[in-house]
Length: 123
Image (cartoon, rainbow, N blue to C red; front, side):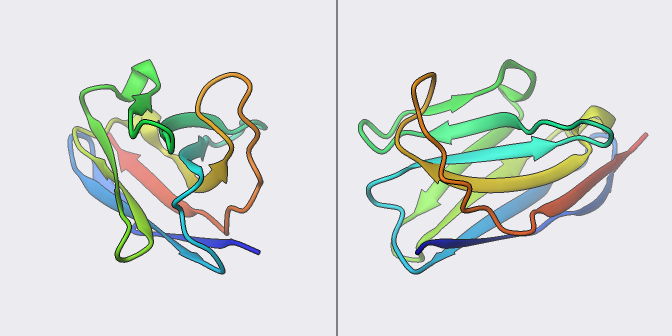
């Protein structure tokens, strides 16, 4: 069973940067799509932020973070990262990583996320 642990969150000012990490145990990321999600304060649902495709290596982003966030993976360390630059107050959320069958509609996410990591951007 795969277990994921997110880390790297914190409090930053508007325009600041953070680098989130997601470490896996129990399996590797090799055969899975890897997604970053976030849950903003007061919101019930998690929003997909980025997805690394296992089939072609493409990386997809939600429009609101394009050009500011960069997802990457390190197979040797069995970890994925989310570099977040030019952070805005509306990026404030708990960030989670998960594994799934594929990016986009039709993909099934396994809910293997951990406790998440809090990102707070002050104005």
